[in-house]
Image (cartoon, rainbow, N blue to C red; front, side, top):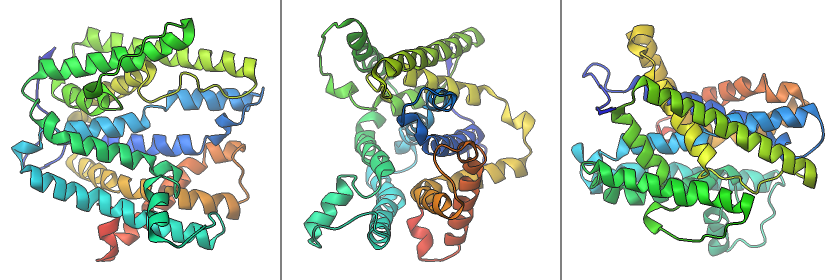
Length: 350
């Protein structure tokens, strides 16, 4: 394997495989959010297939975090730390806060949330405590990673330290908790520098700036498939035993999630997009990827009305299949339209 830097031409000013990863991760998020039946255990083929979908597309959020590392850990080459935080605040914090308020007002008006008080502190606790929109939990994790970036940026030239962080996190937080759950070894060591989901941005940067040999890629793909199969079989068996969907080894930091996300990242990176796509197609993908953040912000509103206006339920095959691209298309059109409004476009994160 060798170190390399993503090629970005002056004409393009973007990396095509980053855009592809962004788009498919956005679609994978929608697939998972249309797959809520997996948390309603039943001894049926619908549940078994929903569990397979849950396991197979679990890489969605990790890919977004890996892209954050791949695109931002070298920010010092482009601008100062002050500019970095200013850009992140404008592009993510403001849209998150604005849409949290919009969704809170909407949910109160539609009876989904009942306010116990109109006290500002109470409302801020709802927003910061992720009680307004469940899928917005992602933002607190993302903001935490942004706060780590100035430290991580100082390590980009010391790849051994970065691999140490990844290796330590993988052993202590990805593997040991699962081993403990299975065979009862109680080993609790906290390593703050490698805790949480920090493994993903660091791994994203490392994989984006190196080339893996074909043999190494093969073993990564094989490991990811086996790890995903392990999660499926384990969850399947214990869910049947307890008659509820088992979550004892669930977690984005777990080894099956890390291996699967790394495999997807490397697979998409290994494709020679320049030989497949023309410049216009790459520009189209780049534009499409730029709308993913906005799609994430509003897609739960789209889902809410689709379920109610189109006579759908979470258990229907149509809901878990054809409505996924429909949700994406509707949300995409809304974000595109909002982007045409001068003031509003600032809160869709584009």
